Length: 248
Ligand SMILES: Nc1ncnc2c1ncn2[C@@H]1O[C@H](COP(=O)(O)OP(=O)(O)OP(=O)(O)O)[C@@H](O)[C@H]1O
Image (cartoon, rainbow, N blue to C red):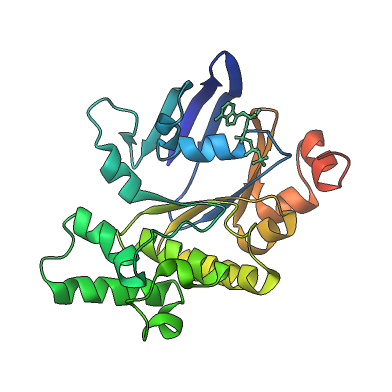
């Protein structure tokens, strides 16, 4: 994906002042920065989730494989299948585990027969590392799973519609350390097949999982570079001050 000059306004207030960034295939990119700097706002620009927020206006250019995702004739439902999103708080549908996964593929016509749908459900749950834990209770409610399992269910639901990019907005912030470690391991495995862009408050998490890290501050993307470099030898003084704990 490629973003150029992305500005976002909420009413009169400019929350992003012109973001330029490229996101490459099959990499994990982390967005870090102090609270309110615009990480989530920018993440939502990448699959037009900001369209759903009243008073929010996006300017600039965002492309996915060269295609303008803000083009007037673009199918937003299809875009959100190509660029899926996983939120901070696991939000399974109030349906069975099976139906949580099957809903998207059915909506997008990805399966013609029940057997095909069963295959998608199983392979998505396997890729999300959840199959062994839920295979005997697919008809039970998704909301009955633990928080970490629910988050993996939400990741499986995203995978089920064959995305190219998965956006994650602080996917571990509601989870305990063990569930967090499982999601981090999963992100590592998924990066073989998908591009992953994640917002995280946790700098150690960015250091553990991301190939590149982008530092945001007060509506600007200050610096994006290889994660090692951001944490050991950043180019910008603001990045240095943030990662050494001088603010934020
Ligand atoms: N729905 C909204 N309506 C109005 N202002 C908003 C809205 N969402 C975000 N903002 C404002 O936009 C700015 C950027 O917020 P955003 O949530 O993108 O930051 P963030 O870096 O993700 O913060 P956090 O780490 O706390 O989640 C903030 O000043 C915030 O108050």
